[in-house]
Length: 426
Image (cartoon, rainbow, N blue to C red):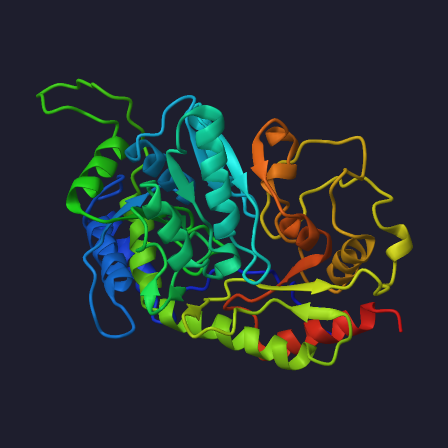
């Protein structure tokens, strides 16, 4: 009997026509194997065309700069917003570390904002309270706001932008997971001053690595590009009046991106289809709840990952052994290096049934990862300011992610749901 493939959360899928290979070959054939070139220019225009097209047929006029990573995009956006050492930046707590780490690169301080329950994203009311409290305590408003499209779900762009505009604070939209998601017909990443995209190997499209920054105008785009290419001044020799970075995207990687743009709409449609199939198949599984977008036509998620929660009282096979052994290897589809730990438990972790489900599904060759641990509960941010309501911590204890990428077939989804049913103790 043929061994079942491992079903990962989300892996990139190349276009059937092989456009990626064509554009990469062009880069080698023309010797443009550098962090700039024709592929980069075309890919940036492709991305701008996509970002500027609204559902009602109207057009925006945003510019796009391709970079080496989404993290680099966050970093440069903060610099462009004038963030310096000692400044504060309001950032969503319920997210991956790349949203907040660049703040610390600059010697600035993250101010973590908890989530509202419906979308799991930044709570606008808590955001405003935090802004006013920081002004009272420090005498200054935060220098920027970073909301996140968690798992592709749109945040409340209307309310977040209203708060930001009220206090004249620039918004950097972290849409690394939300490429192609929309709010009221407008692509995420085009509401604020900057919008961050990621093309990591597990994102909606990939360049193997890489990212981009959506900018509102040519001035910002040129400033970002200048900083991304070591901030060289206009002399016949290298002179620098500011610190720059080597953050530009490779022409080879951009060739992959050009090919990926041909399948972006298909990928988004597939993720939405997978979400709908999970909804249908999980509707009668007691105690398991699929995370869905608000019942509001303005919200249009790409469902980059399908997320769910499991009630604390649901028993899962092997639950009695949860957290009994220290993790020795990397958990998840991506290889990497992890730091050894002495204890299998922390003071903030998923419930035992969530961990048992992860282990059970792994035995079935299905990746079923916990949701992001809130940043305000990370040891590295133990001294950071946080404005919390318990939502993100509560979801972290009961939440898990399900495979949704282009390689996940309908039969895979049925198999995954059958495995979940098998894992639950009747």
